[in-house]
Amino acid sequence: MKKQFAGLTLLIVVSSYVQSYAQSCNCPANEFGYLKAKKADTVFQLSNGKSIALCGYKDTQIAKGKTFYSEFVLAACGEKNIIKFWGAVLDCQLKVHKDTLIVETLDSLPTGKNMQYKWTIWTIERIYFKNGKAVNDFQVNRRIPKYNEQEIQRVLKQYEQAVKIDAASNNPDRANNVNMEIADKLFISATSGSQKARLYLKQFKNHFGGLSGEYLEWWVDDMRKLKLWDTNVETDEDFLQN
Image 1 (tube, helix red, strand yellow):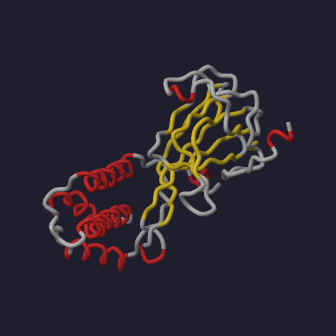
Image 2 (cartoon, helix red, strand yellow):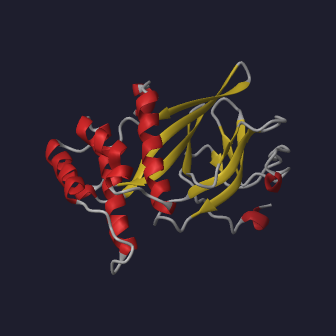
Image 3 (tube, rainbow, N blue to C red):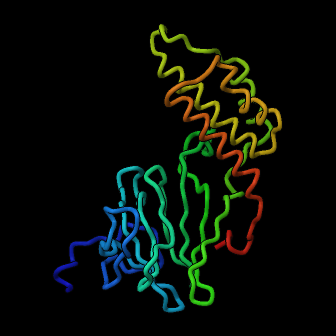
């Protein structure tokens, strides 16, 4: 067995409880046919003796030193049903904390120095067992970095000075991307407490005379995140510190 699996490398952010090889723990049959009865890519060992299998796809090319999982299912070993499916548009990292498996969904957001884009934890899910059944708690990471007042004012000014890009201009895609980055910054400004940024983000589509294609999807995604931010307000300070 050691010879068979010697070439595998640990490529996920996990604690010492995680074993990066397939055990006799398979993913049960599910509606996602390509994952049906597939041997687990990773088996997570919890401190209470429970095991959770992951079947899906991982990518080590998105960001240096990071491993992301997407389009995967989790299932308690020995159970007939999966716990949940995470789709292809999500980029997740997983780790074990005692008797809990933590799934963090990351998003590239302008939360770095000088509002540069960086991978930021956006949502957190805790999977643990209660009375022998898997429980999945979901919450937004309310500790995402915030903007100060000076940064918020800079974003508002960028929005006010931005103009609709004519399709006949020299490089409309690049110009539109710049404008859409303002939408992301308005989102962070809104989570930082700016009501004006919140209003500007809602008006964004009409402000630029309408959006289409990937730019419309980009704005819709920001609006979805803002709605989730507004509705998922519960926090667990002890958990977020771990």
